[in-house]
Amino acid sequence: MLSDLLALIPRRSLTPEEVRVAAGELLGTIVSDKTKAVFLLAWAQRGETAEELAACAEAFLPQAVDPRVRGSWNGQPLLDCCGTGGGGLNLVNISTGLMFLLAALGIPVVKHGNRGITKKSGSADVLEAMGIKIDLAPELLPDCLEKVGCAFLFAPTYHTSFAVIAPVRRALAAQGQRTVFNLLGPLLNPARPDSRLVGVFKRDYVPLYQSALEKMACPRFTVACGVDDESGVALGEASARGETLFGSTLRLPDGSPLTRLTQTPAPPIHEKLDSLLVRNADESASRLETIFSGQEQGLERDMLLLNAALASWTHGTAASLEEGLAQSTEALDSGRALERLKRYQEFSPS
Image (cartoon, rainbow, N blue to C red; front, side, top):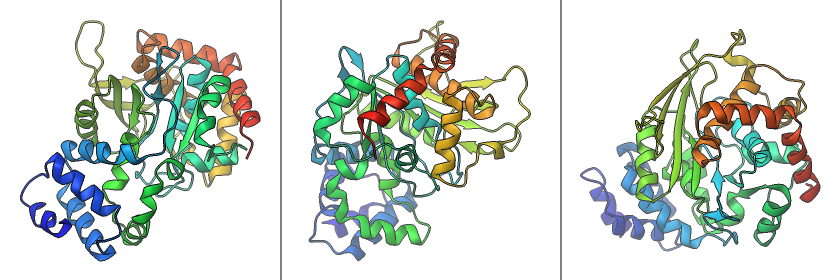
C-alpha cells in the first residue's frame, strides 16, 4: 500500500485516510526500511501540506502513552512552547527556559520535546544539564504539574511506537534529509494542550502550522518566526531585535489579526546574534540560570521576556503583549521563575 501511495505523492496531496494508512505502514514491520525511506524522501521533496501534517498527527496521537492530563488543568488551558527546531543555530534554549517563567505566572506548561538533533542543545539536553530527570514516568506528570507548575514530556517516553522508524530517520538524517517526523514535534504533544506557542525557523512555516493547528481544532495558538534585524537570520522564536511574523487564532484589541511585530528594545541593545549562541547544553543551562538569578541583563533575557509575553497573551493570562511583558518581567525579577526551576530540580532530580 505504501508503494501505491508513493505514486500519488508527486501528483496530489494525500487524503486523511491515505495519510492514516501511510502512518500505519511507516510504524509497522511489514514494509521494508528501503521502501519507507523512499516514501519519506518523496514526501519531503514534494512538501507536506497542512492537511497532511494534521492528519498525520491525528493518526499518531492515539498511539501515544497517556500523560494523564489533556487540554486543560484546574480550569486553565495547558500550554506547550515547542518549536520545530531545524534552524541549525545553536541558540540558548529560550523555549525551555519559558517553562519556569510561565509557571511563575500561574500558567500550567506541558512542554513536549526531545534531545537536540540539528542543534547541540535540545530541550531534553538542557533540562538534564540543569539536574532534571527528563524521562519522568507519565503517571507522575499530574503530580509534577501540581507541585512545580510545569512538566516536560520527553518524546521517546510517550511515542514508543516511533522506535520502528528510527533507523530510517537516522539514515536519512545522515544524508542531511529531513522527513515529516521533523515537522510533527509541535503537533504531537500527547496532552493535546489547548494553548500553544510554536516557534518556526522558516517564514513559510507560519501559515503551514497555522493551518495545521486550525485543522486540529487547537483553541488558542500563536506560530512565530522572528528575524534578527542585523544579520537577517531567521530564528525559531519571536525576535527581541527585529521583526517577527505571526500566525495566530488571536486578535488585537481592534479585532484585526496580529501578523507582524517589530520589537525595538529600549535602551538599544548592541549585542549581536552571536551572543545567543552556546557550545553545548551545559553552557545553555548556565546561561538560563544566570538570567533567572538576575545576573544577566542582555539579549537572551530580552528574548526570554518577549517570548514569555507572547505565550502569556496566547494563553489568555495577559490581555495584551504589553501586559504580558510587564507580568513576565515582574515574575523574573522577583525570583519566582528561579524558584520554579528549583522546585523541578527537587521534584525530579536527574
